[in-house]
Image (cartoon, rainbow, N blue to C red):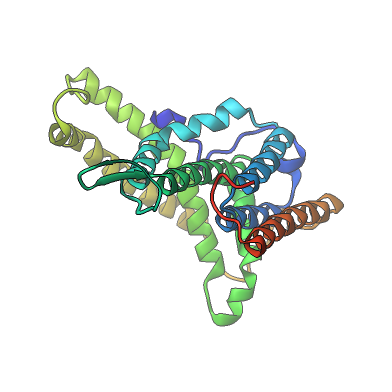
Length: 278
């Protein structure tokens, strides 16, 4: 399952999404996430899913490759849905046993939360899969540049976020290696009760932390030995520059966001609610 984590990985191919300025993709991702939290009806999620499907198609990232990343959140998805179904205090009761009550409203909230979480993971994965770590760092730095007037270390923040994302696939690969090494030595990660399984993972967690600290130390030493310095004095080999396609990208995401906001306002104005409301 660890190999199925796609967050932080960069999928190398040529597409219109890959060629977009990272600032466009950052803004698009932010507006897409906001739109998912604005909508609460089936029609809104349908429009969001269609828009996401078109972006995935244009990006040329295989859909099966992206879906693999959802396997890592299946447990969280099941727990979230179950809690909403069993404990949400709705008015239309379907089933009741003791303190457990299943309502129509609980089912609606569980369905909405599950769909929102899946679309959220897929939407944010598009940004990391189509943007290299260097471009992502430059895009974050440019996008947050206005904070420099308030003495905020924008470059350092962008660099830390980029390194953190880049470390995810590295640590996943390191975890796989440690698990295989421990399994070959007789370690068992599948048998026993929940507490015993947690204890079995200690031989993985300890060397993983040690390896992570070593990698961080090596990275810091490598940057220092190359006289890496932050601040305005740094220059870019390939400075970010907007092209015509970038402005078109902004227009597309703004139109999408306006449509989602318009549907939200219209539904609230009509006084219609509920997930299954079109």
